Image 1 (cartoon, rainbow, N blue to C red):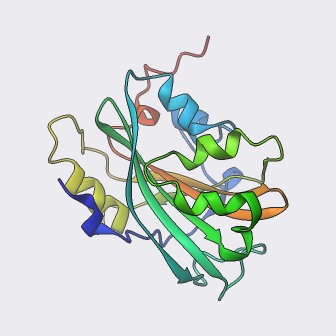
Image 2: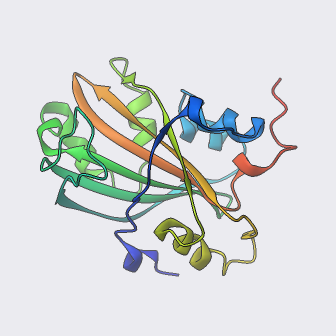
Length: 197
């Protein structure tokens, strides 16, 4: 299935401080994990892959603006799906301000089907600011994406709402925002999987 036609999915939602939400423990362990989501997903599967839905330059809208990425800033929007063993796990939407895509960071504009997270977490200068979370209802654009993905026999689409997180990363003093929403088949919703060693 060609998912590129769905771009941009966008994520219009209210984002909340994690202390304002009551989260199940298994989901909390994924949403609040400060480490690389790519690395964690890879540890749970044989084959990890990224599919680029699309990317384009847009003007940052009020619904996504934060202090370090203000309304009106020119941003490169990048949307991808992360798969484990061909099961869609995560929809990710990144805002990369053009003012941040200078020097070595220009390479972030040309990642294609590479994981942005893997590149970020390989950089020793990386700082992650606080994580915000949000719940996406069955009528949201990302839930509609999940419904289309559920045509695959692997996907359990029985969840009412989907959960996501976003945070600002600072790379060489340059901000960028990454939002990730766990799709219905995601490990994050499976209670028995996360028995931490």
